[in-house]
Image 1 (cartoon, rainbow, N blue to C red):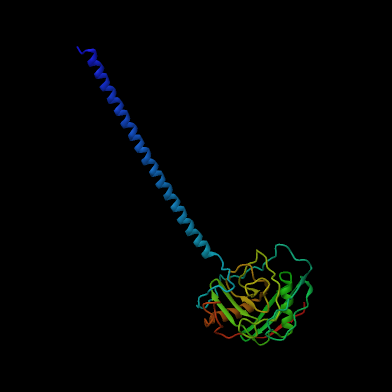
Image 2 (cartoon, rainbow, N blue to C red; image 1 turned 135 degrees about the horizontal axis):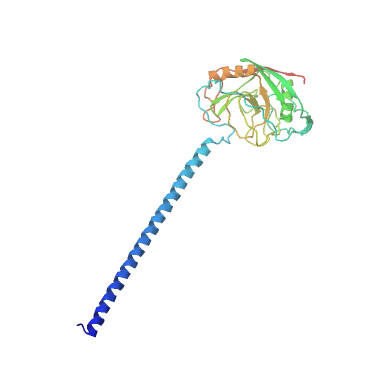
Length: 293
């Protein structure tokens, strides 16, 4: 029979084993907890990296899809072929109608007019009705309907320049056939792209303004209220920020003329900036006739 001393020693050894076993279990749990925490950190980092990567990719796609803010987006030199799905753009509608008349001002610039003309009559200008215009060109007649309710100051200026013969015998100096910009630009009698009437027109734009086949808009220098005499006829899909005053629509027969001009392409002489070039089929405006409205 074991003595009391032996029993105490046996009990002490048993207790030591229990304590050692318990400490080992605690240490193992701590290792697993650390490993689990590390795995969680790795997982979180992986998710963050994935989100950032997809986010950057998404932003890149949006940036590519956004219309250029440049006044002259880049283009390809391939001639545009009109397609059946290239539908007419709806006429823009102002979010709130203009009053019956608006105040129009045409500040004189330091630039010498491309041809001697007087600025249009400033002051109270009608914002009602329309004006019918026939623009005779070397490629055929292009009919326009000018909309005073959309851009009264611009219509007033265009009619004034037409009646003074400013546009007669002037070239359309630039054709662009980029899928995102399909326009024929005219209105500079010098044919250089820098000529104007010696005064500027106020912008008549609004955030909802959009562009497309069948519309006519004013060109500008990229600065506010810098339009003059140059305008562009839109014959196809065109994506631009709402910074160019739309003031007219093109007749169906006029669009047929533009389609033939676009089909011939351009010479690429304005690449890479502003883009496009002179039409391969030369276009000259011989006269612009305005019908009384």
